[in-house]
Length: 410
Image 1 (cartoon, rainbow, N blue to C red):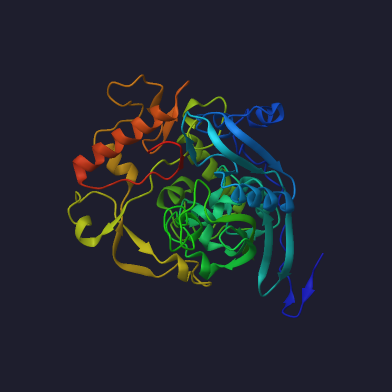
Image 2: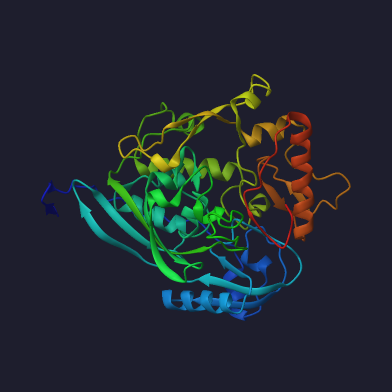
């Protein structure tokens, strides 16, 4: 069927069979929630964390807002959990409210030949399920982020990304509950102040300016209710920006391939690194990439070995609608956390000296810290500190943990 608007016919998109989504949260989470006795270990992919004082599973936006308002009025700690893939929790009881957004839903407010597709997704919707829907309906831009665990609501908070693509590339608008103003608000792309694995939503945890005069935690000032994306019509992927992915596909950087083929390649690479949740793979009992790639001054970057990777830093608040990329920030250089860890002598499968071995570096990828069975939040924290110490001593670079720490010091 051909759809027509004022700009002409919407491009015909060959129907693509909807790919199957991969797991997006801990395997035993649903059963634990149904028992009413879930711990944070049950709700997180790292599998660590203590008991919960109060657990709320919300099926409507009204329930979410009511729960947040009640917790704030009672001055209780609030933790909103999506897929639990970016949380490392301590072992003591969480004396607050844990809120799960249980909603699902994708709507298309607008679709045209000129503007592409405007797609709205509720915060609780699994991210990879959204990616599968986008591929099947010919909405381009999310395919390189296939297999990332977690919910859509977490995407703008962390500005999630993988293999050269980031949420910033397709984000348009985020609807939030603003805890500081006690109001429902819509934040356009410019107000999100997106950066490499950060946003104003995330910075409100520790930055009083972003927090409206105070800091918030363990969930920030803004609770994401809905995310709106602006996506082009295409069955081919966005131009490939990541060398390893291009090499795996046998194409050049900048080339485009069918989106479904790119998804399959991304999942193959992620599985080879233990980055697809799989109950049969102990390396996937993790929080994914544990450290962000360090961004240093150009002067500090000169002190790193010549062979250390160096990448330009983009201003994500000024994404071009044509190139899909932001301008380069002069004077800043991004390096590779994985390279620094590996060359600082922290090998795959290694553990912190003197530890019990229940927490270990992944046997597939040095950037992932894993729970090898029975690990505690303290075990993960000890391994994190060991890795950070080794990189700091070797290269003078401070690695920053990516997961949200709840009741534990990473």
